[in-house]
Image (cartoon, rainbow, N blue to C red; front, side, top):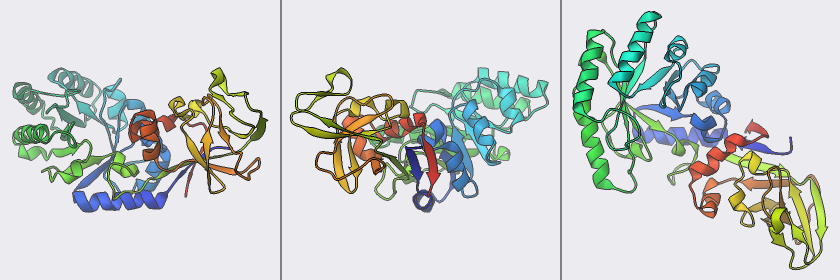
Length: 343
């Protein structure tokens, strides 16, 4: 394949070490969205014996991960089939008393054990239990059924933007946490942004972006995208390049074509903004990025067909160009149609 994603094993392990040194608690690594575009299977292969849990967004991701790990897996979104999750030893989020009754009924009917992690809505307002009244009802119901909560968790929404709101979320989390029966030994955990720096009283921290090299200066990017030149064209002044006259040559130019496009997760918004490295020099994209390819100006670069092209080695350089975040740049790589390689 012409295009490849390279994953730095050393950087990934370095990031994990730094995170664990700071948190000093159990670690749940989020591998949702194909491990933030890095590759779910590849990330599991590196971290399987070094973390406590893996976190995913849905049942499909969990079942895929179960093929490659015996570690605990938590689904943090809604599940389509709780019976399938339980049968595959997959833990899952619990959002309401309604869900609790439904899940317990399925478990008892099929003689299965539910591993439920109750989600507290302390202020994210996305999922979970918001009132103490409903929380108390869930605890009472589970006690009657003799089914303990496996986990209790919340998600911080504004760690880097609103100190007061974060403190309010913490206070709510602690208030609910105190109500847990001690005999349940329920695992408490938190996530969201830079929660590992908050000195929160919890058993485990969920980490996502920092694991992959972003969100803090102490971590190192794990993913690099490379391709190669597959064609070189001579373009005369006044000719258009790419779809919709996306670029018009101001003078005679030499153009190289790279076989990677928005079908592979390279945002079309990068058109005429993307800069790549060829033989140690910077080449600028010209014309609209196509589904399967983009073109760069190599008029001043000595290059040939087959030469390597470094498209991205740091998502932070691309995020501002599309008015977004590293999250979007990386997860776009879930579309990547090339090969993923560990190095």
